[in-house]
Length: 200
Image 1 (cartoon, rainbow, N blue to C red):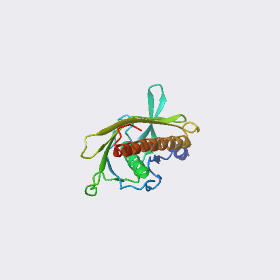
Image 2 (image 1 turned 180 degrees about the vertical axis):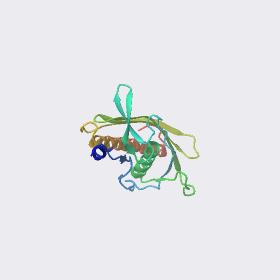
Image 3 (image 1 turned 60 degrees about the vertical axis):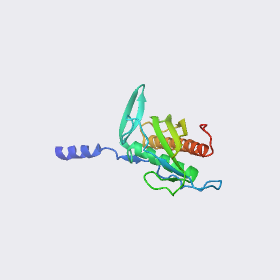
Image 4 (image 1 turned 90 degrees about the vertical axis):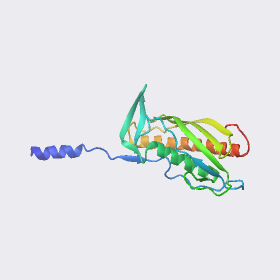
């Protein structure tokens, strides 16, 4: 009887299931640009992400200078891969463009090379999600570079602390922030294509 009770107690304390999140799943399909123009091609190199947050677990702020790694809430891929894919898809959607990184672009087609480095990727459940990005755009074969910084902070909907809903809301806020970064980079590409050197 003692053995059966111990087994039942063990079953009652099983770990909660892991939840996996993506920054890009469910993004809208790319759309044609509002103004008719020649197709745009770009190359987005792998995005640099701070080592503190570049891991499979969600890393959230838990107090002054303290963070927590959430073992049950994880990214579907390493965070750097999630950000690179979300940014690429976001730019593709904004511009109706094609990411030709590691593939061939049509002959004589202008290709815009995009680099991005995440300076801060902060997650505060029930408060805010922040993505601070330094990025640059350069047309292949030319020396002119547009270098800018975009800080996108989105509020996180309130939910019971530690609940699955609170992390769902946090990731949703990061997705909105990532979309704002993609929109800014897209405007930078169009600005450079038009001969401007001003950040959006």
